[in-house]
Image (tube, rainbow, N blue to C red; front, side, top):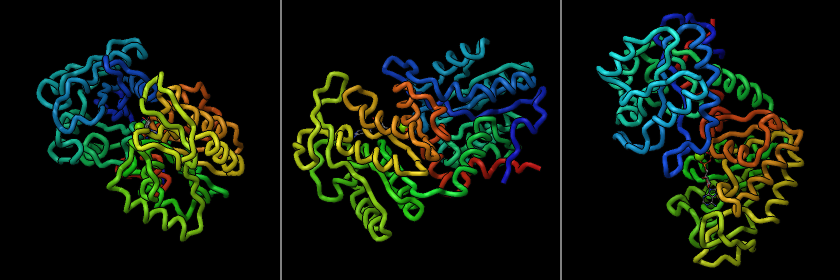
Length: 396
Ligand code: ADP
Ligand code: MG
């Protein structure tokens, strides 16, 4: 189903609320360490400025849990946007309320304003109708451009469009089009590479892809949980012990369907996690209870590369290790390079996965599609749509 996009509306002079994904990584000093998400949001913002819209930007950042958190204010994002857009983008101290209304009332066509972190309000994640209505009251049209948030029914990404017309932004439209067509006909063998840290969300995903996938390559924190569930010692690794039952039933269903799972059987371990960590590459069974598993080992990487070379469709979300630090980046880098070389259809996504590619200086052009969403990408591939897409107006 095609959705209306920002190109299908007359935005001139209108108050247009654009939901972006400005959930950028910040360092301890509050500086943005990767601006990819901001860069991805620029085409829609620039387009609306040129059309003479009053551009009202919204986003969440981090997990402030419904209260103001000084470290999660959007000021660094406003500064970054000002640089890219070559205008001063003001950031307000709230995202609803009389001061916000007054500011927007004074906006001129072509102006841009950034509202404060939507998750400072408890209503946001509950998709609370009052909060959604308050946001919707600030604008004439809603533009959804935060693909990475489109799988959640939150007020600023979903609820607003229940009260004012919603259309897709340029980034959003491209994601919908590319991901929609890529997965219509899956060429086999299909390999799904999963890693990263958000274990509970990813375990569910595997379950749903078991019938479509031929081989799962699993690394990162996710692998630790599966290994732990299978009875292996994992030392002090990141692991969700309370997910062991889910993990076991998952492994069972993969087995029953005769699919292959590649879990690390050699690992990179250390007792510290920083740039200077001393590491060892050891067989899984040699792990010491005081050590952490921080990357997949060389042999496992080689086996994974072999699977990648034989695949015709590859879907990847989540780094294989703590790629942020040199000593634990190798597994992720090797998988990224092997996938880049592959002539298969390659679909990658996730904030950290994309961040890793940037760190490794691998061009996005080498992949069929690089998605800004991790969870959102997987859910879209699974269901063919997302709540934040469904709620938008259909194209004529
Ligand atoms: P994405 O953003 O691509 O969807 P996630 O957010 O799920 O990925 O996971 C990324 C995080 O997982 C990174 O910060 C990385 O350091 C972490 N990670 C990967 N492997 C491990 C591991 N073995 N132990 C701890 N953290 C890990
Ligand atoms: Mg992430």
